[in-house]
Length: 427
Image 1 (tube, rainbow, N blue to C red):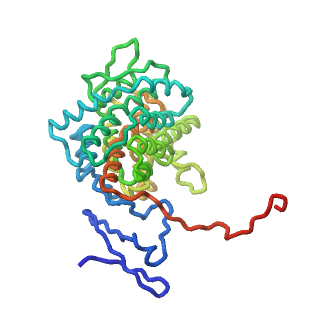
Image 2: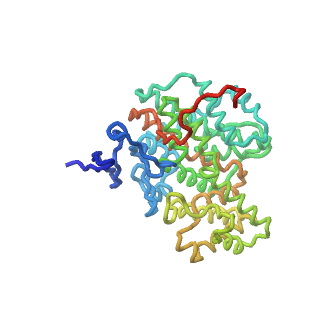
Image 3: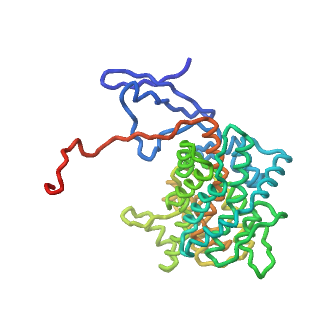
């Protein structure tokens, strides 16, 4: 017997079906609420509203659980590489050897960007924020690939997916190189996806390229940990834009813009900016931990706690180890990173933070790693976007294949009632 939920309003009762997910998440299906009862729900920020059914990512904030397609994030970060995880998210299963080889080869073949794109990049001043540039360049890809994707064709869908996965790292790297006045370049056929990304970002025209394995391993893990995170702001944006049947590139471009905000993808940038402020103030971490405890003090400790995770962020546990390895391997000496380690130590030992489970999150550690690798702070969110790309693709593909209706939230109007129009001279 199917379960139902009963709503009583103005003496009338209305029954609505209850749906249950594979992890025992329960939701009330209110599609017919307005039609039957003349009511809508009000949920600012959609904090308690399920916008879709999805088979991609499961997270449990109370228990600190994150899984992609049923696989624990801990296993994927330890045993898989980024393209394996990308394939898993997009197509539902881990690839076999032949599938991964073809996927990798096809992405490399699509890693050339039309030369006309350089003219668009030239139009941006060096002062332009990399996220604005990346969003614009991604949207501009549509002009060079004008045909819309027939979502009923697996072949067309696959071509669009490998195309964006191939070109996106090039656009991201070019964004950085433009800012650093370096010549635009491409990857190397003999290097892997993450190594090519690093090469395109940091290769100097007068030096042979080389990189420490610990650096690539840390970048690979960071991209995996950011690859998807359920129905967050940018992912919901990709699905919402895609629901109008906008193409993949346009939907991804919209997701980049949503990710740009400091409350979302910009959080790791905010961490470093906070650390810089503490350094300028003298570097007393204890002083700022006390300020963070004071409810009357406007100071906020960035990179601690999480909107979803009410326990330790599972991604932070994984990337903390990589942060320690990278800092040790590279022998980086940086007072800002010393402050970060001081804050981390105090937070993990202070009863105030421990009782409230305000642990360092993935943004805290990713900011530390990116700074140690020499990635400019304004590029942090671009790195986040590079990791999140497979998740956006997977969510867009799922939404289109499920033929979800166009997104159209309702509202409660709180403006003026009907008013008489007054001519200009009478106002």
